[in-house]
Image (cartoon, rainbow, N blue to C red; front, side, top):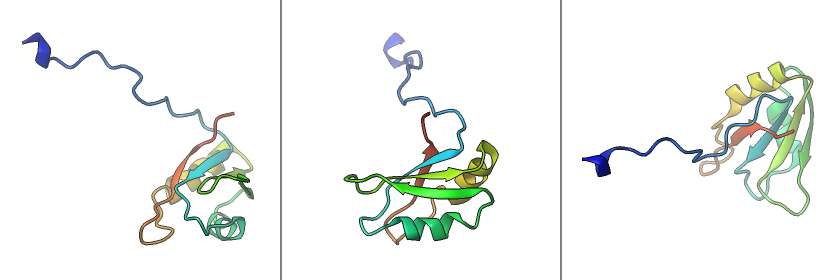
Length: 95
């Protein structure tokens, strides 16, 4: 039955951005600030700074010295529970 065959895979999701030294953090609680994120990320080598996005709640950029350092933090903190209901979503920032 041709109707049951799955269609060829389309680009359903945007492809993951290639590794970068900057991480894009999403799903942050409304009261989250750069100080809270700095404390969280500074445990990882190469941490440089957190940049909140003015006027946009829930997202921030976190800069590291290089892609490798950013990758380690991404793997270590992706899915980290910031609050009982807010789970940190991390991806490489698009250049």
